[in-house]
Image (cartoon, rainbow, N blue to C red; front, side, top):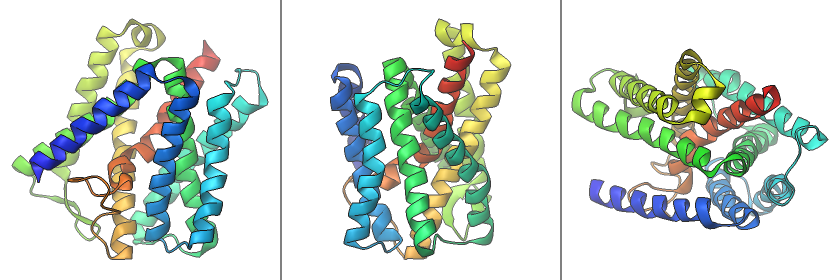
Amino acid sequence: MLKQRVLTAVCLAVGMLLAIFFFPDWAWGCVVAIIVVLALHEWCALVDIGRIGQVVLSVLCVLPIAYCAVVAPSLESDATFLIGAIYAVSISFWLFSAPTFLYFHLEPVGWYWRYGVGFLMMVPTGIAMLELRRADPLLMVAALLLVSAADIAAFFVGRAIGKHKLAPEISPGKTWEGVGGAVVGVLLFCSALWFFVPAIHNQMALLWVVVLALIYVLVCVLGDLFESLVKREAGVKDSGKLLPGHGGVLDRVDAMLAFLPFAGATLLALQLLD
């Protein structure tokens, strides 16, 4: 299983790197839209949204992503204000609503939560992928590497010394030791970025990098746990079978759905303050 997981991850990484560095904006927008639609398909299956509802939700999510892919909004435009508002609502969801779901072991029920949560997960993530890459392809790569660093560190540390369960009723395999490994991994990664990337070094102090890294780890864990909760309520182990060794697309991007809106908001804030 580990060999299959690693092989799939390598293939995905190569494909993403080629798309990030060599695709024009519209083609990268198509890649993002495809990822969003595939993840939405699995989300709709988990929360029991029918075919018509899936089409409606996909259109609602893809349209703003397509617009941002074709039109690069200036910092003074209304579109930039709207993007900031979308980030803010998404961040509020991950900081307040998602922990409430997890604490009380709730699941998204009713059309508002099933459609609303789907929109709040997919659209800010898609826009952040566009804006990070538009600002600098290396920022998009750094975002992907940060999530990978958290995932890999949590997996191996948890596997080696994990004894204390993080949320046994939601995701029995996750441990507090794994979370600690993720924290250390992300802190080391973000500190290395600060030291070796002048653009980051010149924009913020190391203290802010450490604070943001801790926030990023928190939301990555929240995203992972939230998807695990939804899968548990749906009675399935994986969100799909598209990616060998990883399950579905939603299984692969769960942490990114929570983290990327924060990364996009950080970029937007730095651009406005510059």
